[in-house]
Length: 551
Image 1 (cartoon, rainbow, N blue to C red):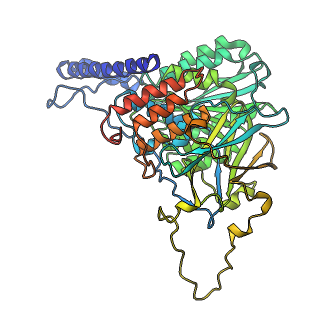
Image 2 (cartoon, rainbow, N blue to C red):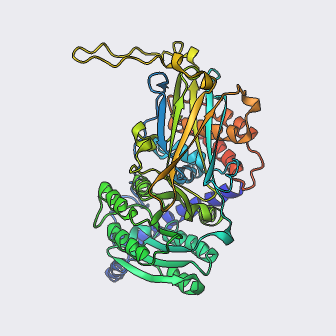
Image 3 (cartoon, rainbow, N blue to C red):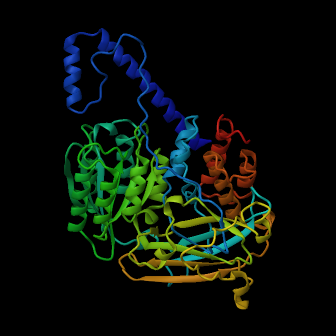
């Protein structure tokens, strides 16, 4: 319970701050005009104090308005394989949703449905997938076994493993910290935590690495020009001096940060902007679509992006996710210093070093073996089938040592009518002759008739423009629950948990009890302790009312 106790302590500290704020409000109400003037003066300087007067209706601090924003997610549906045998999507290595869900549960609340992105819950955890061979950027494997929440279905797990790069072989890094120091970042779990997190990272950087610091509030500024990590004290001191105050002009900061990164570009090495913010852009470019277009434009400079989200109450998750997706980047949410340790230290190479970009997956299902399929998660990462061969189409990046997992729920052909999935097609066309239907099952080549699915992966080198493709067919060996690997069981447990939290219509027989049982079976060595923490979170969720009624 160590990790969750720490986070509970942080939640209690937050309540204590509210109590202190209430006392400050009372002092302002009963105090003299001179004190009010001093408070107003300090507020103008960026120090957050209670207003000089409060209405004499209640003697308690009001709850701050919650303006958190999440993009709407509509669960993927089952698709009949003989009508649409191809499924195409971009990979996703973001993990922000899991840490954010943990924050809600640790505070005794259910997360909003749209805060739960199941693929990010699954990909938060490392998996023991085979290492790629020396000449490959990553390996790919598939495991198919019984579906835990629907005994009549099968579950396919696609797993990618990025090539690991040891710390001593990590290429030099040109990093630009783009830091939100606006007034909204003054809370303890925002700028103070941000500074501690980046100080951890700076301590681990090598003498060949460089760091610049760009800050933005009402206006942008260069707090530290690009500085060699031979002078770490100078970098650490610059971080320590940062203070919060003012509004948020993120667009201007983005432009300056990329200009600094390009000016100090190191060919063949890591060139990355690290954006740290709550995502609440309220001055300058404030429209999310315009911010995304700005990031897309800057991504052409071959400078990558890492987005680190902080805080609560005004968290603009949807903005930060989109910036990372369109900026050739990754997105993590930092709720504690332990999470900063995981993202920036334990997974330093994966966070900072891109080994393949524009990674797309296309799966072709054999209708003779698969009646229907459903991709679990990745709703905002789906691509058109023709996008797979389009090298101009942006997709996700994979970092050194990263694992990427995707799950498909498969319906056997003989289950289609039983589950009313074999719905009739459209009426014959009146003015145009429809294309002759292709008898997919009969035309399956004898050589591949046993295969369940073929997985294709298209990707580019980090600084390349032409893509490569790897392709492999996979057969369902008929594994039952007991024969599935620990990683398969655990990933399935996390997916089931996510579906319960989202109150998904596809959760089947999922329950908190079944999630705990399956996750326990798949816990494995758990060297990092993250799977044990997951079990603790499920137990917390089990005790909460609402969407977790199925226990």
